[in-house]
Length: 88
Image (tube, rainbow, N blue to C red):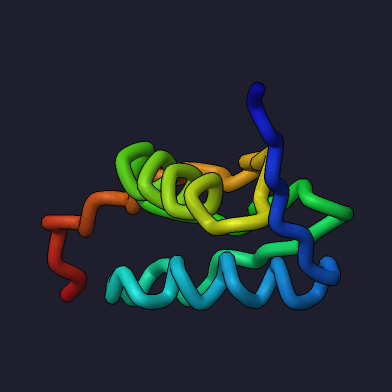
């Protein structure tokens, strides 16, 4: 016999738990990630400079107790290279 035990939180509490877990990673760029919850679904939004960090955020979010689905709408935009020309 298998028992399915699901942890449930109010959506605002769940979103806060996810955001706190993301912030604990210590990457400054993750401070701009927004988390919203609808029931047990987490919606991630924001901009990051790498697909690696986007995947890390998604992995952290799905591991938070109470999260059953992650919608990852984080956009990846690579930083523009600095210009090497000098103005005179």
